[in-house]
Each structure stands twice: as structure tokens, then as C-alpha cells.
Length: 486
Image (cartoon, rainbow, N blue to C red):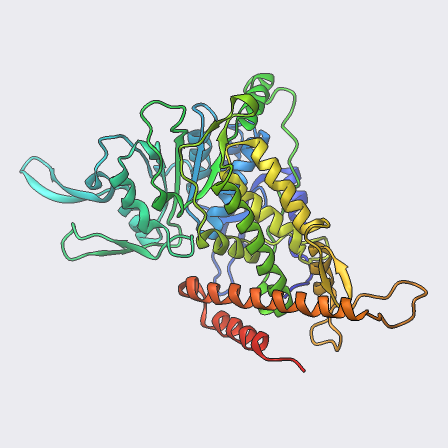
């Protein structure tokens, strides 16, 4: 459903009252056993931590604006099972915040599943190997962190945090490729042939991958993350502006929260609400896929042209780390729009705000330059909310944001969908000139053609992760779009 009673209208108050993070329990349908959850800045996640442990973990850090962004992106990626890489200068909180996030999921009594990359790390260390155990010379297979992430907690799996990722040799970085599937989210399992008869290790529901590294351009001994792996990870680069602001905030707070906690950023911390099945609504899907295509193409052109930089102004230097956009990025954004929709107080999806938030977290987060982020964000604003992105619909020229709002307010199956009310005093009909009518027909034709291409790409590249029902709905939308209208 697009619009529904907002089930999370009390979540915002709970977040504000509990400093953005709190523990709660809920009984799952079909079970009498309560399940423990932690809400991390608006995202609900299952946890093994107790309420006391969550409170203690939360009290171990000052939630600076940068930490809010990092934790929110971590929570979103864990919820949607998207592998995440965090990149930045030393002492910016990458390792510390990564470990605190894992504690929020796993509790403080269970050992965290972590590993630190070195130039000498081998595949055997990552997967596991036969080693002597005991005093009688007997050998047994000892699983490494990759296999433990699949087998922990009786097959439920566990999140794995690999620090110093770019200290791994490039050929050993490739070992992590199966952790990400073809749609940019976690894959289905690992194939490993070094442990007798067991050759396949399926990922459990709690399996997830978080990695971190310093900038290779600024930290001695680091290499780049190979392009094949980089494209499989959601990427968040901590800019110099973010780092400097965090340093100042920590110094002013004395590291003990002096002066009170930083205010929660309500532009980032929003209750995630219930899923928005956008692909079941042909008109919305048509406009949405066209918008995502243009945003993807815009950043791709920017990266191929000016590229990204480290530093700001005269101190900016070109990046060595390759940043190639692929179809996985768009597929991740489509999944984000479905599972992290921004809803108003009535429960109606704000499609434009959802696209903006997802694009900022999944696309722009990879940019290490604040100036470049600001520049590309301004282009997003113009495309979605401004004159540049306006489209004709039923005789009116509308911003994409206004068009999405109009499409969602139109009752499904109404005779004239999305028809705007005529201006006061101009009667009941909108009369188009011949030129306007021809332009409108051409615009509709181009949009329909592009939407067909976008849905065909989604069916082809993301078919493995779509349910049969979703495939059927998308196929039906294709047939409807291809049917000539008299």
C-alpha cells in the first residue's frame, strides 16, 4: 500500500527521548517468544543485546553529527543486507563506531567477529585451514572469520567486521567478492573446498559484512580496493569537513558529553516505516525509474569527467581509488526506496524525499570531497524539485516531486488519474495548443520508452532477487506500456 495509517508515529518520540538509540521487545506473529530489537536512529534491527547492554553501549560515545550519519548508514545497510565499506583518515572513529554498532547487534558478552587485514593475510586465514590441536599432533579444521560469519549461532550467522581492508593484497581482496550478490546486496553463500565434504556455506539471516580502511592516497602502505570489490560495496568516505567538525565537537565535549549531546538530525534520523512497493504502480514506477536513471547517469558522467578529490579548494588532490558506477548501484537504490521510504505523519510516502535520502546515502556517500557532494546534491535538487527536471503530465508542467505527490494522491483505478484541478476561473477543461499537444505526446513517448528499458534492465540484472510475484507484476507493467493506446 502507498498510503496507510502510520505505524511508527511514536518512534520519533522514542528516538528523541532515548538519544536516538533504544531497546525494545516484540512478539513475532506465530510465536509466543518475544524477540529483542534495537532501534538505531530510526532503523529497527534484531539484537542479542539486553536493554542494559544497549544503554551501556550508547553511553560509551558522543553521538556527533558524523557518528549519526555513520550509524544510520550502517543500520540501513545491515537491515537491507548490503555490504558496507567506511573510508577515512586515522582517528575518525571508523573502527570504534564499527565495533560499537556490532555490539548493539550482538551484545557485549559474545566475542565480536572481527579481523584486521595485513599485507601477509592469506586466504587460509580468511576462510580457515587444518591446524594441529592438542598435544597428540591431531589436526582439525579451524574456520576463519568468513566461514564463522555463516556458521555462527547454529547457522544464524553473524556480522563480520574487517578493518584495514586495503592492507590486504589485491588477490586476497578478491576472496570477498562472493559476499556481495549481483544486485549489490549480500550474496547467498560461500563456496569453499578446503574442509572435507562441506563445500558450500549458506549465509544466515544475521550474516553481514562491514569493512573499513584509511585513504590509500594519504596513509603509507595502503593500496586501493580493487574495482571488482569496490563496486560490490556501499561506500561511505569521511570528508575532511566531517572529520574536522567531529574533532572540534569531541574537544569541546571533553569526550564526556560536556555541554549536552548533539541534536539529532531529523533529516537523517527518520522511522523507516513499512515497505513501499513502488513497482506495483505503473505510473509511479515509470517516473521513478526515469529519475533514478538520470541521477545515476549524472554522477557517472561526473566521475568519468572531473572525478572525485581528497581535500577542499586549493588543497584538493585527485583520488587514486577507482569509483566505477554499475547497475548494482541503481538496484540498491530501488531496494532502498522500497524498504526505507520516507513517510509523512499520515503514512503517505514522500517519493522525492526517499529518492533524495537514498541517493545521498548510497551514491554521494562515496565522494570524499564535501565540495563535490554539495555540487552533485544541488544537481539532484534541481532535477527532483527544480525547473530543470520538470515534466509534462496531463497538460501541466510539474516538478518531479509534485508529480510523485499527485500520482500518490490519485485513487487507483479512477477514470482520470492524476488530473490536476484547473486554475480558478478557467473552467473545467484544459485546452492545449497543437504544439503543446505534440510536445506532450513526444514527452510521453520518450518517458514510456525509457521506462520500458529501465524495467527490462531490472528484470534482467535483478531477476535473481525478485519474487515470482514481483516478476509477474513488472512483466504486466511492461505489457501495458508496450500496448498501443488509441
